[in-house]
Image 1 (spheres, rainbow, N blue to C red):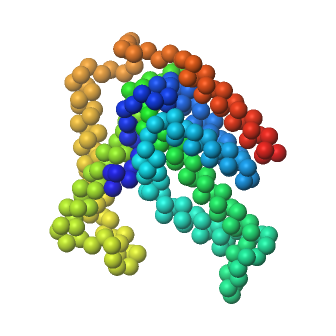
Image 2: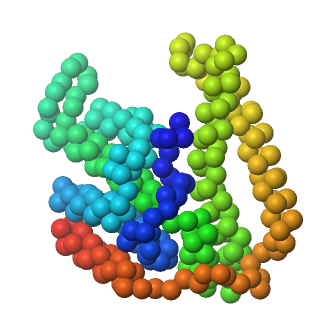
Image 3: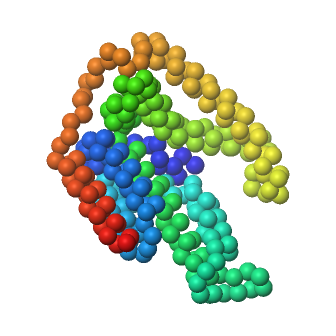
Length: 265
């Protein structure tokens, strides 16, 4: 299961994306996610797919490894496709069987929504795969810095978000171990009715929650033992600085915004 989760993992490297400032990557992803929801036709989605492929090339990561990030959501994407095909109506009727019909608007929405989910997950994976947890925390803190002037605990928020991302693969690994342990004891998670399978998840959920709380307590104790007292007065070994790579990211964002805005209208 762990091998199918890319979000939350970091792969060290020296690619263009690895060496770009985390702040520019965060801002670009926010812009990209906004444009994904604004895209409304085949051309705009084709442009977004092209930018995603270019991002994959700049990351120098294996394409097969990147696509693994989509495996945990294949069921969600498939469910969304089926839901739109049979519920959304409008346009030419492609197929009819009794009261069920497959129409043009349903197929169109199914394709666009599935692309939207896939692009959002892939672009989020690039952030965690090419940014170390320390850099991600500092980047979030620097971006949220202005809110600290009005009493918002910026450092704590950034730290919690980075820890949550880092714990995704850890919890997936723990879930995999629990499933194997329960299967060895005779549990069956692959057969039976839907209600039966849901009940079988209880022996997984309870030890998983216990393990998560135990890991959180151990992490808190370790941070306190090392003198962690928040972000006040803390210094940093490596300070963030914008470079020509971040200028390229900004130009790419402006170009993408212009192209999507032009073809959307």
